Image (cartoon, rainbow, N blue to C red; front, side, top):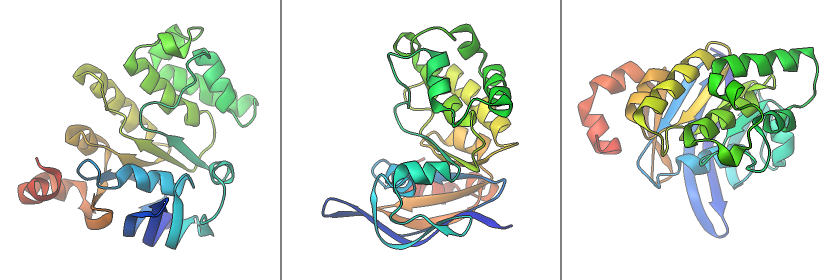
Length: 234
């Protein structure tokens, strides 16, 4: 399978502190890949490094063969990377409609079709379309955060901890939505909830202390209780 997003020996830093060390991750076109690891392992930093929000010190970082190192975040996003940050990515004082419109690259017929698609995917957002983000529930805000990049024709969607702080019933709804999304969009998911990771991911990478330590098929990780205990504390 042709590589869409690829890193090799990726090292990144915040101020003078090196956070990622030699991270190797590859995502093919049409895949759903999950990054796992304990709290503080470097998972969120990896997504932020891809988006140019954390500085790359050395190593390979490519999207479809194009080097992303040193590019500003807005330019990386325009290449076709949708980013759903941790702790929501919405504007509290804007309505659901305004949040979606602000995310749009352009308001043409195709974009409006994608907007209708995300409103069908998340019926709660259709009901709350004129409601301000600050007045939504945590689950609805997470749905809106995921919906925003979906209104554009992105090549890959990076999603950081979508289950964080959500009730189990809402996590199940998010899992169903992500399984639908991955039918049409390449997905790279960072997740602590192992059940959600298993429901969405086809392959996995485990990051520990800023390094890639394991990778493989999700079905193999599900069977390997020793690996789960060693790196995930399950």
